[in-house]
Amino acid sequence: MNSEIHVAFVGNPNCGKTTLFNDYTGAKLKVANWPGVTVEKKDGRLKGKPDVVIQDLPGIYSLSPYTLEEVVTRNYLVAEKPDTIINIVDASNLERNLYLTTQLLELGIPVVIALNMMDIVRKRGDKIDVSKLQDQLRCPVVETSAISGDGLQQLINQACELAQLGKASQPQIVFSQRLEKTLAQVGDLLETAGVLKRPELKRWLAVKLFERDEKLLAELHLSDTVRQRLEKMTAECEAELDDDSESIITNERYDAIAKLVKSCVKKRKSGLSPRFFGKKY
Ligand code: GDP
Ligand code: MG
Image (tube, rainbow, N blue to C red; front, side, top):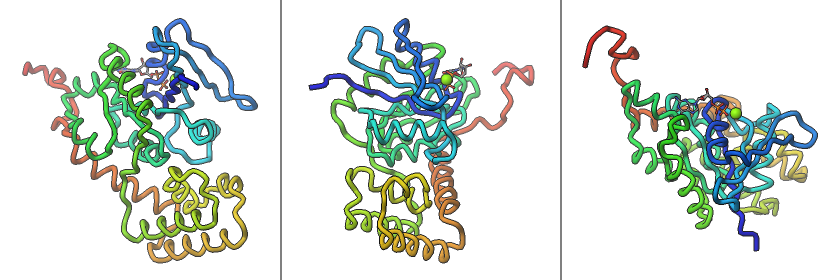
């Protein structure tokens, strides 16, 4: 039995992945290239616990198939299926970062969120209600600062614990009723057509096929009949919601995230620090 735990670091560019990776792996850091592509991947072993293998992946904003970084990261997540994803989030840019988070939660892999750059959030005087965020996303959220090392032990412990439990995340973003109806139809179609080899990927595949993700459409080798049915379901929803399918998903995702952030984040009234005004508080 393979007792190694594979942990994937996923996040936007500049959220602190490499800083965290270096912290965890220390001298054992190893740099390699994905075969055939120029995007860099890194893997390393956790200092003092070499059975934990950490995979640093290219920084991405979405799991779309448009950039090389996106393709490399999503191929790794879907094909290699790590035991846990640590989704590193720049807490000082929460709303933008959660766009990727909500997609990662659709992959059926356990996810822990590292709310990184908390030192910046605190310095700004902003407040994030972590337990509310955790409840709403229904996955563990750990506050970290890769620079100071705060929260790093708790984060990796949480990731290993989750990997051992093997409890997959559940997609938490609920779209509009109309869109959910079509996604359910697409999911059922995949099931009855026998192309859903891994049931935990149902939500992700339904969303991606609704978006007409060319890469997945090619990979799944759908029959003409299934393709036509899929196209009909998608087109009907587009007509009713008066937009193209990709924009429907993007907009509804952003709307849901905006609501979530509004309920969890309290910003200081002014964007300027007290010191800017020469006042002592
Ligand atoms: P990556 O692109 O996700 O690998 O991000 P890096 O690890 O290269 O970090 C990007 C920048 O953010 C660097 O200048 C880091 O020093 C800085 N950084 C990373 N984590 C933190 C943090 O928790 N707090 C602060 N203040 N800066 C951080
Ligand atoms: Mg980096």
